[in-house]
Image 1 (tube, rainbow over the protein chains, first blue to last red):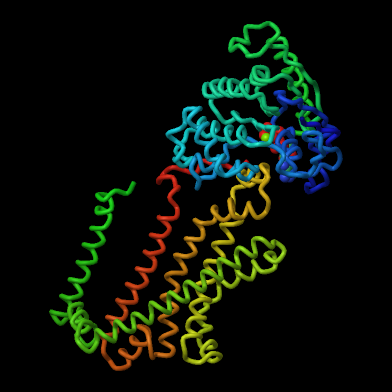
Image 2 (cartoon, chains in turn purple, red; image 1 turned 180 degrees about the vertical axis):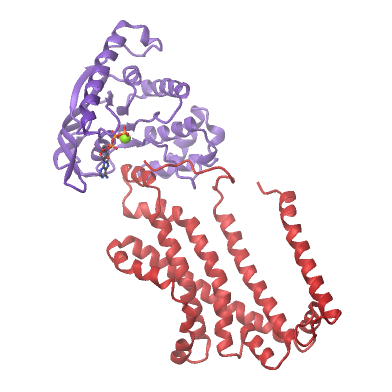
Amino acid sequence: MLEVNGLNVGFRDGRGVKEVLRDVSLRVEDGEFVSIIGPSGSGKTTLFSVIGGLLSPSSGEVRIGGRETTGETGHVAYMPQQASLLPWLTVAGNIEQSLVIAGAEKGSARKDALAWLARIGLAEYAGAYPHVLSGGMQQRVSFLRALLSPQPLMLLDEPFGALDALTRAEMQKWLLSIWEENRRSVLLVTHSIEEALYLSDRIIVLSASPAEIRDEIIVPFERPRREELWEDARFNALKGRIYRHLQTSGRKEQPHG
Amino acid sequence: MGNKKSLWSRVWPPAVALGALLACWQAAVSFSLVEEWVIPSPAGVVREAFSANVWPRLTEHTGATVGLAMIGFAGGSAAGFGLAALLHLLPGVRRGVYPLLILSQNVPIVILAPIMTMLFGYGLLPKALLVMLVCFFPVCIAMLGGLSGTDEGLRHYMRMIGSGKWTLFWRLELPSAVQSLFSGLKIAASYSVLSATFAEMLAPKTGLGGYMVLSTRGFMPERAFASAILIIMISLALFGLIALAERLVIRWRPEKGETKRHAGG
Ligand SMILES: Nc1ncnc2c1ncn2[C@@H]1O[C@H](COP(=O)(O)OP(=O)(O)OP(=O)(O)O)[C@@H](O)[C@H]1O
Ligand SMILES: [Mg+2]
């Protein structure tokens, strides 16, 4: 589905070029749920910008669905770090507009939006403006917007980062239940090791800036996932393995301040 | 929601204050603290305004002033809006023009009035051009500010899902700028009446500005005051109209005290 080969990305700053991604290669298969985990500021959003085509890498290529799409936008469904609902559109209007921009037909976009809002229990908010929604509800709408987009690959950038622990756990369960029905190809960025283990088929661990791939972990738990995953001994072993990677890459960062 | 009760509670204190002021003014004249031919009494002004030979002229001049202000306001705002959109879509040109626009804010545009008259004579054209010019700048600058002040997180999102420059403009930047646009329009609305009456004063034939000048020259303070009051009323009405339009257009605004939830990202 997605193939990223040898990406190098840098930003020009005052003194020169700041390297953000170093030789990053990864794949997401059809219907696979892959998580990327890495320290804050390591370049995860930047990686998404490159995959989404907003940012051209200094070298490397992005292929989506077998075709090279480096520097081309419009090939991904995207859920950003902030809910990013347009304040002047209603909840249903937000979903509809995003789907139309992503290439859906207007009438079916509206119908899908209303049907799915009802399905996730937000039917009564379809005509409301986003500011009346709680943070968790906004994220649900934002997720729906990505889920309903016609593009088969979904990029989720720390979708639950801004939520409190309880809402977050609830949202993970919710996302998982929807995803297990649909099996879209997903690339998820997260800070949370538990979240990555609970949701994904495979986990890619990034180092601190400049981001390199540290490790790749195949998550062995069968689907549908049980909620009590943390009781499994393998869960804790994997958690320890990822944790050590993040710790060492964190230490590497310290001398630079 | 600003319900009727709270609206009423906001309206009556200034209304009472205004009434008291008028009463004092009336009393001052009635008890001859000031001479009636220096400052007329409110009652005198009203009596004169509604007298048979003044009222028709007042309505005629009011019509002329309103017309001039509206033409200038509409033309100037449209031009300001258009140029702002154009500059926004052509960043290279914008870099050259924007500093000049900002500088022009410090130029009192009404000083161009005599030049306009010199170039275009005494008809409607020079006056309308002046009002347009005055209204143009605040709208253009507010609109440009609004367009470029679009939330970066929203812009990133819209581009990620595949919006081109054009979609970005219509679906994101323009709606984000509506609030700023209305601030500009409100300023332009008050400026339009101000500059319209000023233009009329230079060639005192039509309009309340002209009528006011002729009344003062003819030493008829009641008529001058009546014109002044009408000018103020036009100005307030135009401002109110824009504020009303704003409320109708911007229905999504969070209630007071609630902040916008979108942070940059
Ligand atoms: N447009 C830009 N210009 C210059 N530097 C940038 C730009 N965008 C990102 N960076 C830098 O690139 C690095 C990676 O940023 P990025 O937002 O990708 O990190 P992240 O992993 O998503 O962080 P977080 O987990 O906090 O969201 C940061 O050091 C940031 O300062
Ligand atoms: Mg990020």
